[in-house]
Length: 500
Image (tube, rainbow, N blue to C red; front, top):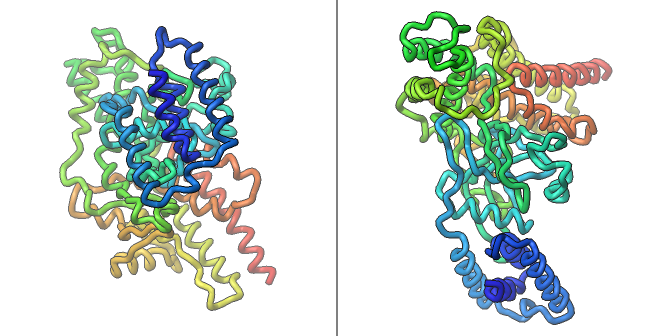
């Protein structure tokens, strides 16, 4: 096996990026007796010798023709396929707990609702993504913030789930929409950010982390299913009438209902995922896939025609609750049911959603008024406008609703580096199961920061904004943060206009 590994390494040594991929494979995938670290170290030393000897010689790559290069890369890809067979992917449980999730730990945070082009060349992550891409769809992985990225992957201070770990444990579930393996071995991936998760257990630290995670919808979305979960719980238990009482199986009904409500919110998210995230192909992006519009667009062709099976899933969850192995207590649970009506009020969320839109409209109008060049076009955030509520009585002078109506009427395509059909989510789902209002507000609470990021570019305190926002588990709290930011920006813009 060692000789085979060296042979493969020689094949891949002809290009630098492919060499790194092979190194990752050799160091972390060559079976050895008793998983011997000595054997791995020996292999590492042999590879170092190969690097040293090759650095002083002529690179054969300098003399090959494009046809020869293509033929060689095809051979490399065939070799790779022999090592990435029968990949099983992650294990998805019906309670929103996913096991064996590979984690991409990098020095920046991605928020749900965004999409990005990942240019993967680091060996351990190239290996990780090759395993993901050779498994079943959807191609999921986890995105976790890690200061200095790969430099701290093997730093014990940032090992996940250790008692004194400095690592972030709240991340974003990602889906690879499309990918391309380049001639030099790098991977180009279109990745879309779906939702928040917390890490429950780390099963591997290096060469890359693998973990068991729990999907964590915002509190308001969970509480929206609490009453339904309580009715189902009473039905399952046949006769219970108090939230505080213990069941015959020994668990607290209120706790079980809160967990069931979280499962309901996760089920709802999965139900709407195809509508919320339009698949983007590499070929749709500018410059051969090097750029993609930062905000994921909706897909009106993927609206679910049937109601979600939330009730059935919650009832099954409650029926087997006592036999389930609890992960970790959900510290977000309210102390009692009465907290739900005040802390996680749907009406308050929708009021904040409205106030944020009014703030955005005012900001755009102020920028237009300050602009001294009448020929300069003040861009309207078209990718956000699909989330604009359609049933609002907007204040006099509000303009964004007219922009959204025009985009719908003209069947416009929106986006920066990749284009998608404009979708007004309220109108698109008017004749089918309505898109949940709280999901609309939650999406805005994340993607509004794309606009804020551009405005705050270069402002040092804004550098940690995204991770702080991701760790907020309330839509209302994020919308309040956005409103404060918009109010501060608009105050400065207004002073500038008044001082002219």
